[in-house]
Image (cartoon, rainbow, N blue to C red; front, side, top):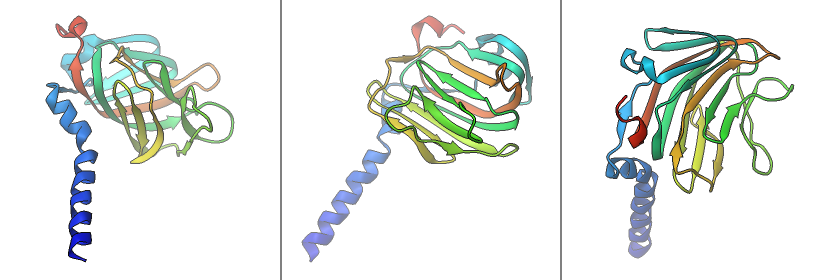
Length: 194
C-alpha cells in the first residue's frame, strides 16, 4: 500500500510539473509580457476597416471592422484577453492561419477555423465578458474560452505574424470590446525595435 501511495504521489508531482511546462518554457526562452492596449503600443496597431476606439485599456470596435496588432512573436507564445460582444454575431480573433470566430447562423457560437474533424463550439451571450487564452507552440495549439478548451490540436506555428481583431463584417456589423490583453512571448527580431 505504501508503494502505491508513493507512486501516486510521484505521478501527481510529475503531472503537476507537466501542467506548468508551458510557463517554464516561456521563462526558459526569455519571454516578455506585452500589453498591446497600452498607450506605448498604439503605433503597433493598423486599422484595416471600421471604427476603433482605445480608451483606458479597452479597445472597442464597431461596424464591419478589423484591426491588426503587427508586432510579431516567436513560438511559444500565449495571448490572453477578455472579449465582450455588445452587438452583432460576427466577432473574430485572427492568429496566424487560424481564426477564433462566430460563423454560421445557429445562435451565438465560437469555434476555431479551419476546423479539424468535428468542430467544437462555445456558446456565448451578448453583454458578458469572456476570458480567452490562446497558446501557440511550434507543434501544438490550444484555445480556451472561460477556462474551457474550445480547440486543442497537434499543429502549431513557428511564429505569430500578427493578431487581428474584428467586431463584425458586412453580414453583421457588430460592436465588441477587447480588454485585459497580454501577449507573452519573445518578439521577433523584425519587430523588437517597436
